[in-house]
Amino acid sequence: MGKQFWKPGNMLYPVPAVMVSCARTGERPNIITVAWAGTVCSSPVMVSISVRPERYSYSIMKETGEFVINLVTRDLVYAADYCGVKSGRDTDKFLNMKLTPVPMEHVSAPGIGESPVNIECRITQILKLGSHDMFLADVAGVAVDEAWLNEQGKFELNRAGLAAYSHGEYFALGEKIGSFGYSVRKSGPKTALADPRKAQGKKRTDGDRKKKADKK
Image (cartoon, rainbow, N blue to C red; front, side, top):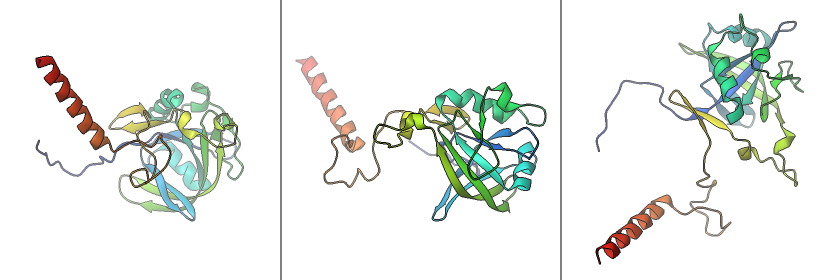
């Protein structure tokens, strides 16, 4: 199997599906989607989002110095797509998508009540890069939906049905295929999955055995 070599392009997929909420004082809040959002540092806790300067929310975030990143679940994908194609200049996205703006603890921008995680962000720097400007931000706090806490108080985020965006399409997270460090773990939970390459090899061997049995 060969490779085709294309011109440079943004092909780092999948990426988190997120909705970013923001608001000026006295104005209705707005929501945008961004394809490029991610963690940039763990201490201090920092994130980044990249936004085109012509977008309506760009000036809101630049003036207020804050925003909220809201994770998207399977149930929120339709709203996320709507918020990505409609402009807040003439659309009340919270109202039209029946989303709930909820007060945050550390920023004045609202979070989205239906999202399982709201990440409160304070902008520290805006980097002008070209088609997009990157907003670097400190994470001031995180709000989580209590519905996803188990009886021991552990936050089981992966049960919430998180969604991802890949090459123009949305996907719900699927089957768990491993956990961090399982490839080098000498002993651990029985739920740690085996090396998928070995599993594939075993499947081929079983198939070969069946073919031989059929010939007999």
